[in-house]
Length: 195
Image (cartoon, rainbow, N blue to C red; front, side, top):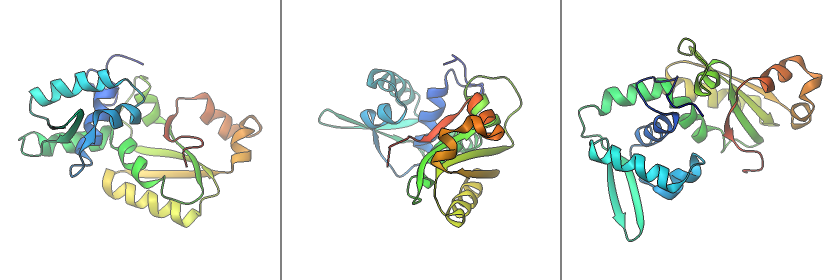
C-alpha cells in the first residue's frame, strides 16, 4: 500500500483515513483497537500507534476497560465538524457502505470500483465525483436502490450499484464489463463468505 493517501493527501496513510472516517462517521460508537485492527486488516499495534497519536492531538477519546482500549471520535474538538465533512467526502464510502450493504439479504460480496477505488489504491487523479459499487449475489434491486439512496444522502454524491450473480462474477472473463472491473483496483466492502 502506498505511503500517502490519494483520497485525502493531507493524511500520511490510507489506514489513518479509514480509521478516522470509521470513528467520525460512527460518533456514538466506541470501537476497540482489536475490532478496528480486524476491520482494517492490520495489526493491533499499528492501530494502537495511530490511536496514541490521535488521542494526543485530541481527535479521539480513549477509554480503558481492563485490557480493552476503546476509541471514539472527540466531537468537542473544534475540528470535528470540518474533519467529518472531509472524511465523508473522501473515506466515507467505505464506512457508509460497510454499514448499509451487509444487512441486505442476498449480498454475497460487495466491492467499490472505479475512481474511488483507484484513488484508494494510490492512482493519481482528480477526486472521485461518484461511487461505483459492484454487488455479487441475488439481492433485490429495490433493496439495493434503497441502500444506494441512503448512501447518497450520507455521502452527498451519486452512488451507482451494479448487481451480478455469483456465477457471472466467477466467470468474469466472459463479460467485458466484469473483466474490466476485475482488472482494476477493488475495495472490498463485504468479504466473500462474510455472511
